[in-house]
Length: 309
Image (tube, rainbow, N blue to C red; front, side, top):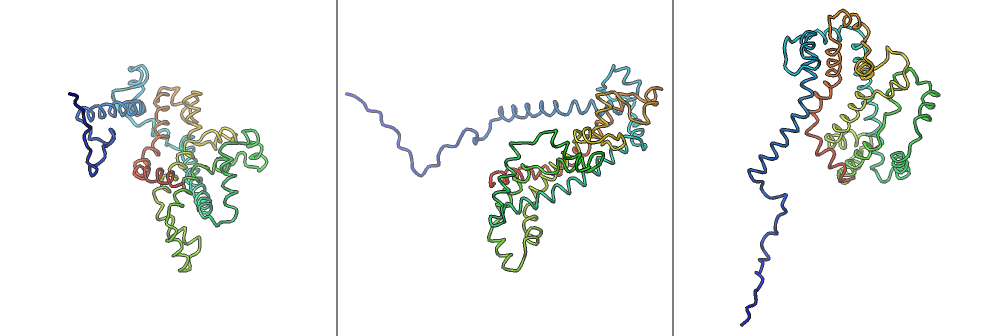
């Protein structure tokens, strides 16, 4: 007699099986994730630790270590005091701060206005403007035409050359546009019924609801301006106008001591390696300080703008 195996009948009211990645992780899995994250953090923080400790070390400690210092000993702030005593590095840091503040404010103003206009389907020529902006993401005029344009406009040896050539990012405009399009149209229509114009709607309704994406894009622009060095090396000939990143390149790569520190390094009062590390710390410090305050906006600002765009 043949026995027929019947398939178990599934309860139609039962919840569907969950994917593997949604299951509660085991203790081994949690321990493995913690170990991997710990190793990744050490791989990131250990080089930074060496840079900071070396910048705070005396010339004798650096000579005994044979270069980079891993264990702090005889801590001193002489390198930072000399760098901030009013020489070339101090001037370059002030230039970088001013260019970052002015450039970020200009870029955000133009990007927000452009993104808001492109997010309104009834705006004049928004489709053609959007297609033109998208085309610039795939096609570029090149370096030589850009340089000739900056030279023709008389922007060489000018701080505007550090801002205008890279003032806008089409990617950032598209992210802002996607976020603005996700705002309820009924909310905007009700504001129009109450007599609000586009400027008031943007300032009172759209921007307060878009704080997350605005904070993220602002950080992107600020980091871009603070870290930029190519425009200065291309369009500036006056060494007194160079920003901090270009001074760091001269110091680290070309082994050229900043003005005012060359004699101190030659006489042994300062270690050239400590000065190099101190300049690197100064260049990294603003980004390291500002990033944690904007970190909580990254997920909402980037994912929402990208998904709804």
